[in-house]
Image (cartoon, rainbow, N blue to C red; front, side):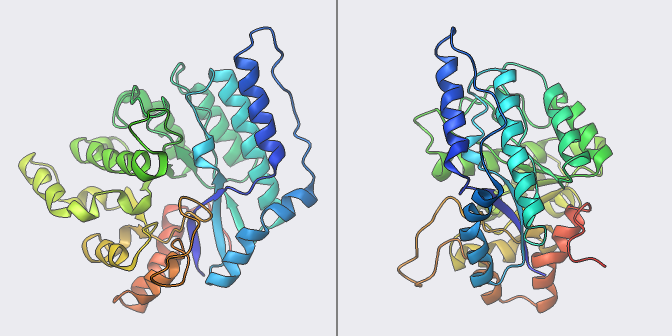
Length: 336
């Protein structure tokens, strides 16, 4: 199978955004009542909304997508813990409904109700609900709930440990994925996302997090940000800091996806990063939606780049399926 580890519900019905707009408007008016639920979205609307995703799966030769709410819309910096929890549960419930309608095409991964103003108790409860009740196989963890202000502790700080304990207990991974940027210095998908990917890797390099949690699994998306391009820099930093070599650091704990939108970038990723630490991903439909005039194909048709790479068929199978099953052990799709 070809399993895309990184897909977002970017085509959700407009009623979801209408709810969010009303929620944000209520925050600005203390006398206004916050909108309630459930959302007035029918199964037929959900079926219609994912047709672009299904068409891309068919056209590009992928079988299934690990599917989560739209990352830029998580916006954990808006409102308080109650705001985030309500918004998150609506988003996750829609993901579950889509997965129930198309169980062979979509596998759920949850948004978390993070907020800069509260600890992680809501996040632990929502992770347990999504894994235990909704059948999800992982989560997206935002290392910067402040939206580009970077007020949260590093991912290696003990602040995060209660959440990691729940992840280990449930045997689910997290994709380290920021959301919208409210800092004008950082364009969301062009800067903030890639900054966060690179920052997370450096935090892992500096710490003994995986000695404390040897089975904790973290996916750094977008090809690992700047890390593969500067692989020698990070190898050198690890050596100077007396840290483990990078393959040893990553081993069973840190993984990159293939959300890199040109052939030379994917070739470099596959050349320098251990193949056992790479998962196929496209971020479909996501950061770039247009066609590359140099190739005539969509920028985010990343399967083409892996297909064309000078690696063995066995390594391609690892990237397309085997590694993803290892990182997401709750994924049962396609198994007898």
